[in-house]
Length: 466
Image 1 (tube, rainbow, N blue to C red):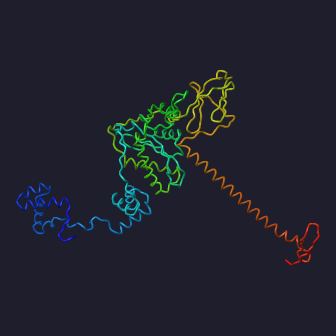
Image 2 (image 1 turned 30 degrees about the vertical axis):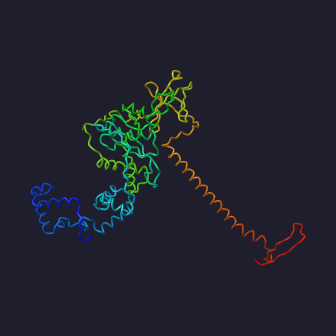
């Protein structure tokens, strides 16, 4: 610092002005202490320091000195090593939690963030003006509104197949109600998750989803059907309302949870070396417990809105079953999903000719044929080809990954076959070579050959010992 210059903060400059007024008897010490919002004893110490050293006595002695709360250099070096090797792509909050949980190092989020910035592991996010949406207050009761969505992502980071996470989250409390890894976001995936949800928690009042074709018929020119999807019919049978959001931001609770889990859940499974959907689904129960303890909030109304399922498990399976109608032929046969069936009857069955029956396709692959209030026995007797199912933007990746896997397996098989055929030809050539050499030898152990035209105009005998 140049001679004659004194660096002071705004707070120190204000203190200097008030202390000077007190020394000049324009303020009492009581008034000066009140103006600076400090005690009278502290103000007297400031006056004493001013009289001894002038304005320099009010400057903090800690300025330019290292902090007493700074991290030890060896501890800081260890943290930098762990952040660079073990937690390279972790965010500051998750990294600070894992440092405490797995390595026993208690350090604040901001300290981790500053170390990551210094090491080039974290880039500060630039604040930008966001589009403002009208805030919707949470529903008051737990189980009143449940937001549902599917999140396709590389959940196993190349250690396993790319898949989709089905998410059910409560709107009132942000509690995760159900999680499930599935190959693709399909109606069956949601129904399987719904079955576990109902058996565990009961039936909520309403589901809040996007406008995907699983939840809503998006064809404007539809001229047949009841205007509902299969999922819509199931929730109607379960007396659960289905509401579709107009924008992704409207169901922001589940969207934000997806974004958080794509960071936290991915890294939790990496630390546990989880690489398959089966192992991932087994881990999800403990992750739900952790999430709800960390992020869930209490509802405004304590009473739950869930309605318990009081019927049997078989009745729930029947409610979740996909249903379609068929007309029996004169021979009491019908076709479904590439298979031909024949209905068995005790009598002639003439009353069933041309009858409308309802097929119940269960989630476990079974099927029941319903006619009025009874179930008809049916036997499969033939099959026929069916076209491949159509794919949408949420299932095309799974279909293409299966195609790519089959092509890779075919290439590997063809490469193995080619390698085996080449090896067989080389081995046969080795076996033929001694016999061919023996055929050209004369009784004296010499080899005789001819060089010339085919008409024998030139004959040259070459003799040599081999």
